[in-house]
Image (cartoon, rainbow, N blue to C red):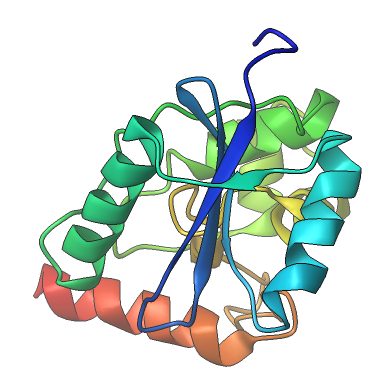
Length: 173
C-alpha cells in the first residue's frame, strides 16, 4: 500500500451484531463484530493503523459483505477474501494461519492449534492470538476451544462463539 491509498470502512449488520470492515488498497485490514459506539471503534482501529479510515465501500469490502451474508445463511463454509495481515506479526500470524485449517463445523483446542502452528508449548499464546485477531469469523477463531471442550470467552462474548459454532453444526447436518 502506498501512503496515498486511504483506509476505508463499512459497517455491515449481521446476526452477531454490526461488523466493521476496514480495507486498504485491495485488502481487508480488519473485519470484526463490535458492540460499542462506532466512533470509539474507529478510534481504536485508527490507533492500530496510525491512520483514520474514511467511510466508503471498496471491492474487498463488498466481497466480504457478500461472503458474510452467505456464511450466515449457511451457504458458505470457507472465505475467499484478500486479507491484509499488516496488523499481525510473528507467532500470532502462524497461529491464525493454523486456525484457518480447522474444518467448518469442527473445533480444535488451543494446544492443538499451537502444535499445528509449530510451537507445541504455546497454547496460551494461541489464546492471545485468537483474542487479538483483526479477522473474526473469516479467520474462524470461534472454532478454537479449551482443552476440556468448553468454549472460552471470545472477546467477552461467549454467546457469539456459541452462535457461530451452532450455525456451522446446523448447516453441516
